[in-house]
Image (cartoon, rainbow, N blue to C red; front, side, top):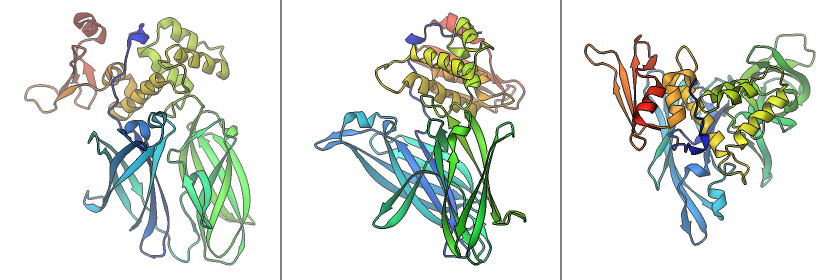
Length: 414
């Protein structure tokens, strides 16, 4: 087992991953042929380059959203720029400070490949996210329900109710109740409806079941429902919303499904399972530390306490609430899982291991189609005077180190 015993000497490289997130929700529109798609973006302040001004600090960025159909043809594209201000320097580095953007699109119901790019106009560095989004059809005269939104806040602006979503569907276990929002379209007369909320764990076990009754009128209804967070353990869940007649004696009139995650306060939202998060410490923890964290007799609270103490000892800024090193480490784990996963999770692969330990390589040489040679990659870390060669022995993307990592580090020096 390889471990970085001198964790304090390790300084992570900047992550070349998007420091923004987005959420999308579909609703019925006034057009019978088009649905309304609402997209919300949250751009973290620390990912932007703020410049000092007479009023404080200012950053500017541009956003481009592109919609492609199943043939990869561009359907629609929009670009705009935005300026954000901060009065204090601490705001520019705060993990809780974000710039929220909201855009509305009217689209034909179908599946889209959506690409969103955010570019800082000072550094010119772009960040990009891609996602498949299915815009559903809402047929006039048919009972239906919109997608379910996790609510950040509900506010009144000039007499109009404005619902602001959580851009991330990560919910804190410290918050007792989370509000859900949806629109219900009722073509019939006023009546009472039954809303059944169920949540299934990643093991497909029922973790939540609640029945709520609401009076609904003819036409569009804005529905807010409670979800009690304190009933959940940390992990990922699938939420099901089924709407019935008040008598509950027929099949559901409409239903929607969505996913969410429960996380513990003080942990990165990418950490969904404490046992797995401990296993992922294999690259930086000593054998004794792992044995202590993985003791079978520990209850969940004791295991969490030891885990937090492990990271507290490595906190490079203990006077602040954030543990930047822990955030960086699990950001790398998350990126490795997304980019290098094969038959095993990305963090367990050789490329994932090198990425987690050393960060973004300064240069990558890719050789996927060399004659008489299996596909291979060479990762260069110039400042650390290291390079790593990975070969795809099977031809199925399972890249392996040609030399064990401890040999590379012994030969080239730590």
